[in-house]
Length: 386
Image 1 (cartoon, rainbow, N blue to C red):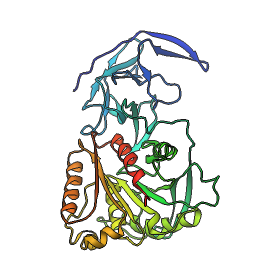
Image 2: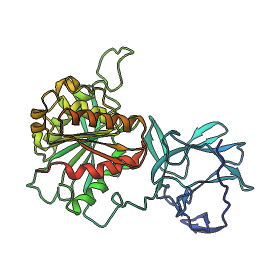
Image 3: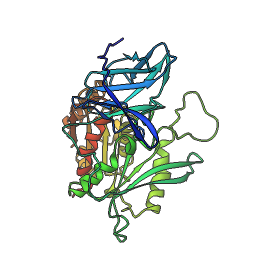
Image 4: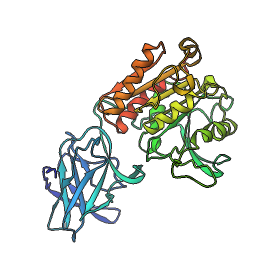
């Protein structure tokens, strides 16, 4: 068990919306990821975090970072201390910048923190706390023109089910009704869903800010659920729950987006990328469908195939032809991602040696959303350039 410093700050009772709330008298602030007006978790300027939950009948309460191996909150679990008022409190050491998942464990039962918003992760709904990054504001909400994020349902003939996608439309989409836009298909990671790049990755604000600064082309971004894409009919134990995702994208999703929105419907104006599991999906779909995609990216993913002569159906077998056809092949990740970083670095070195043009990017974070926010901020300006 990891012991964290226990901080009992002085508090004052304030009335807000008819409710009496306890507010700490120190230099900490409620996390921006908190539910409505909840005071806890609280984040200090040095990035320490105080967690506080009420469980008067509990015998043991802990804060459990998830997953522990990569989490910017540290290893944990952190034992909380019970006060006379039935509240359990703990202040943990300074956390890494970014959005970090965690659970509250009450007498062995893993639950979410009622003071925090929850987000999809690890095929669960998880609490998360946002730790400010003193070196980055590119994903903040700023006074710039904002695009729309729309939810669209469509019927997939591949899976014979209704599916939901999130679609980011650039700020001038409704104003410039005669303009068509390139499309960027952007995938989440394992255990997440089509909401993740918006709710956790803040992709809409990243693009708003880049477009406002003239650093990225206005584009449409499409986010689908890469976890669930089953083929209809009997299933075998070997079949994955998303074995049909490639067909969903190629046969259903791309045609639907081109029909529903003002896209430029050709390969030169179509990109695909993803993180972790989504990286594998993006590389597989993009590199084996070069008739559809000209910009391909992998974030924190370990490619299944690395032999330039045979990988992805021989996509790299003729480097000169590949370099002429593919406008951008981009690989990125965090240096603290262990095997993900090493795998990305290996494929970059292998392809470079084989004569394939590839852009490699790294940032100083782990296998968490801060890495993918930085990656998107770096990748988006490189898309759809002459």
